[in-house]
Image 1: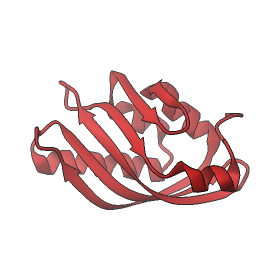
Image 2: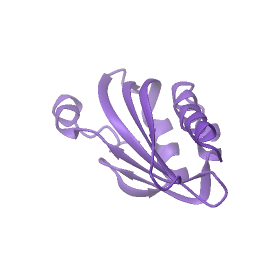
Image 3: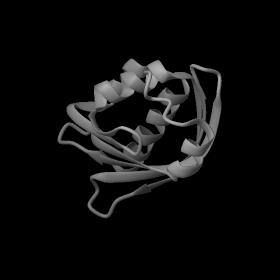
Image 4: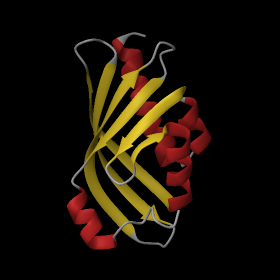
Length: 130
């Protein structure tokens, strides 16, 4: 995969997130991929995105930048997440998702980085009931 294709692939992930296309998102990941989440810890990617879909009413993600790793097998995206939960509560925060690419050029893993303190103060753990 060329660097331009990697950037497009990362941006496609964010487009699918904004469209709430959970099946499309899952298809971007290797079968054994995982997600590291500040709220949920390490989870199988399919289980994580299904849980996210069940907790979400809508999402709008704005990508500010995509950076490629030195080894050619990773990328990071700096973004703003405007997230509406099933309860109707809205959360807006900035974060970074760090992706590794697997042998099939799909995502092998994703690590999510953001300051959870303001989010938890505002709304608590909204995944608890999802």
